[in-house]
Amino acid sequence: MSNIVVSGYYGSKNAGDEAMLAAMIEVLSDLDPKVNITVISANPQDTVERHGVQAISWIHMSAILSALRKADLLVSGGGSLLQNVTSGRSLYYYMGIIFLAQLVGTPVMLYAQGIGPIYGSLARSIMSWLGNRVDFITVRDNGSLKELDSLSIRNAHIEVTADPVLAIHPVDKEVGRSILKSYHAAGAKPVVGISVREWREWKHYKNVVAQVADEIAVEFNARIVFLPMQYPEDVKAAERITALMKQPATVLNDEYTTSELLSIVGNMDLLISIRLHALIFAGVMGVPMIGISYDPKVDRFMDSIGEKSVGNLQGVTTEALMNEVRRKWNDKTTFRTQNAELLSGLRLLALRNAELALELIRHK
Image 1 (cartoon, rainbow, N blue to C red):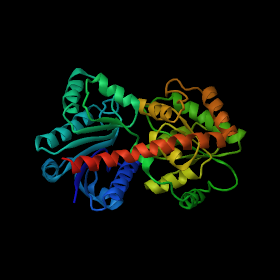
Image 2 (image 1 turned 180 degrees about the vertical axis):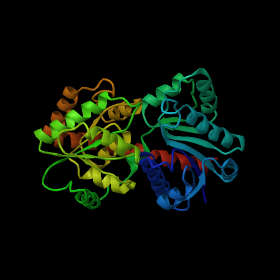
Image 3 (image 1 turned 180 degrees about the horizontal axis):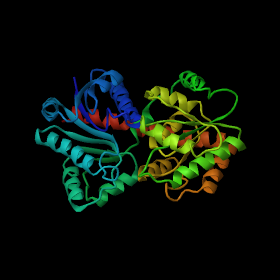
C-alpha cells in the first residue's frame, strides 16, 4: 500500500482547491486502488467528510511530522502554493512542509504547481534551494516553467503537465438544473454565469462587470447568475456588484461540492470569470468562457487553450468585455469545439501528474 501525504490549500472552502484535491484523489485511486492518502487540511473533519480520506490539521506539526515519516511521498500541490502575491506567510509555510519531508527522508513531488510570482531575495533563495532538492516537479503551465528557470531551479526531473482539475470527469447537468430552479434561475432564457472575487477592495472591475451584466441581460434576454467559488467571500463580492446593477441578477448563496458546481456550470450558455477554476469547470463542461485576469495563472490557463484574458482587474473595460461576449455568443459552437480539442490534450497531461507520482513511489 502506497502512503501519500498531500499538502495544499485544503479545508478552506475554496471550490477550486477542493476540486483539485477531488481530482487528485480520483485519479490516484483509479491508478492505485490501494493508495492511502492523508491530507494536511485547515479543517480535517470537513476534508474527511468531503473526500473520504484521512486528514490532519495544518497547525498540528507533530502529527504532520509523524505522517511524513510514514509516507512514501509528499505531494505538494496542486495549485498556486509557491507564490507570495496573495499571501506572504503561506509561501514560507508550504516551503516549510517541503523542508520537513526532506528532513525525514521522504521523497517530495511538486504536483501540477503554478509557480510564482515570488518576490524578495530571501523567499527566492529558499525556494531555489528547496526546488533543486525535490525529487520531481510538474508545473501546470509554461509560465511556471519560466518562473522555475528564473529561480535557477533546473532539477533534471521537471515536466509541464496541466491543472489536476482538467482530469476530472464531466458530470450530469440535472443537479445543477435543480439548483438553478430553486433560485428561479432556470427556464427558457439563456444563462450567463459570472464568477467574481474580492481583490484589494478595488472598484473599477466591479463597475465594469455590473455594466456588462446589465447589457447582457438586455441584449440577449439572459439570466445573470453569480457563482461562488470561495464561500462566503465570493457571495459578498457578487452582492457588491449586483448592488450596482439595474437589471435583476441571481447570486447563488450557498456552498457547493465540486460535482454540484460542475453541474451548475454545465447549464450555462457562457461563463465570465475572474476565478481560475470556474474557467476550468467551464472547459470540463464544454461551456464557452471569458477570463478576466487578477493573477498570471488566469492568463496562463487562457493561453493554454488558445485564448487571451479580456483584460486585468484595473484595465478591463466595458467595451472590450462586451465585444468579447458578442464574439463568443455569436459563435458558441466553434468555441466549444475549439476548446474541447485543446482540453482533451490537457486532460492527458493532467493524468500524467498522478502517473508520475506513483512511478516515483515505485522507484524510490
